[in-house]
Length: 624
Image 1 (cartoon, rainbow, N blue to C red):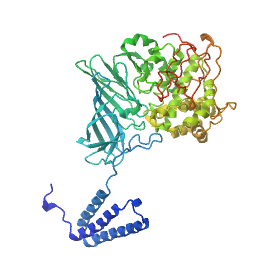
Image 2: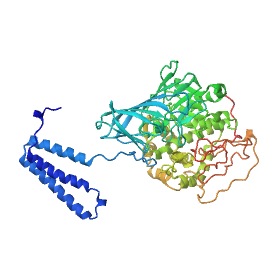
Image 3: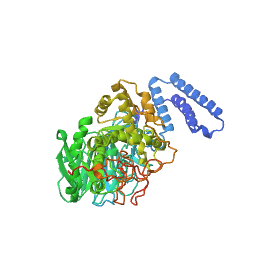
Image 4: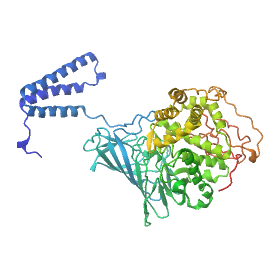
């Protein structure tokens, strides 16, 4: 409290000179919505008059009042004017992503998340949770928006003080006691619940014995409050308390030894920045199997404890996959890697950072041949470089993730199972115009279907985008292409990059201006001619499709992997164990290139996957 003897005295001339034009400002504020005033010309004239009134009043202040008192009066005018205007009403912010405009939040950059989860042992009950966020303001923040839904907020603190909060759509809007200025630290603590119940668009996925996460594309904020956009990467620490008998594994490496007791708290910390969509926490009756990969890399796999022997055949392949990828694009970018096998029906596999998520039946169903299982494992591993270490700037850049993962998936098949890349790309070219008509060009995909945010993962994002890389390699040559791949993941390691960055780097390395080339391949509705393959044709999107007639089956030892391995097709194996008669024939497809949901287990509208319909007539690799 300031003693009255030291309070500034504002002379009456100041009061008259300031408050009179201030009243005019307030009256103008009341009529600022022009749509409510029939005579807009009158409003414009009124605005001029009010502005002149303010100027006259301020001139009177300057003439009549000493400088010290004049400053105090003008300060009151400025404050009163700001109060009159007021901040806009709270609501979803968004960073303007072309596909998800309301996703993410402007005004700050997150540096770290520290997330505490208390699991009761029941995967159908909400967990008590605390999320601590450290960030730095990049703008003036009277309010701070976080993405969060599907949970109950208990309390919020901003910079150590309780803060008001309210929910608007899928945003949690915080009002700190004091505005946060640019460059200032921002520390947020949210006490909330994290609810694994509910379906659609994932987040938590309930398994037979616990939980895993599947947050792509924007479901992390169903688990914890965050800035849920891949452009804002941060360091992560997870603390998970669980009952005895359960094992917890998360992104990164253990940061603290878990001490058994009435409940055990497991702490994991990542050494590299991570997008929220790549967060992973596994809780269940699991075994953690350890081995060593290239360059001494710790490899740890998480499997149902009862199946550790059954899974061994597949898990021993991971070090070899890591070594193969290292030879193509350079050193693995993170501190550890492993495979997480979950007894859950997700309909997809997912490249969560350092710990890729796989459905159990991919490894346990004998109808999936070896060549196919390994190609899927390599696809998710390739994402650790393309999509995880180098994250998309906006979601329409996701073609960079899936094009590269599909590219190395098929390159692995070519080198290990004699499945030529050129045949797959020829088939992709044949379907490319249809895919573009249905899903948009690779770098300008159509918006997701209402209520199905992950429907952006269409065929054009997978094989349709790998086709762009094939065309690029044909244009600039294999040597320049290989230099580009290595340079891309080295230059942007732990960062964010987009389509324009890739175009610029490809042009620099090749010594060519590739702007026009990429413009047509990434944004045109029609597929451009393939360099070096003038005979390749793309089917008319409007033409009716006809299924190929059945052909006589070839003996397994003579069969080749199907050349059209569509990452976007249905995941479930056929209900009959009889193999398809033509291993190279495409199944009947829907207009968007996906397989009809004829499987009784298939769920309409689930995310297209990296797993095609299994073709058990392909060549088999020796076990182990």
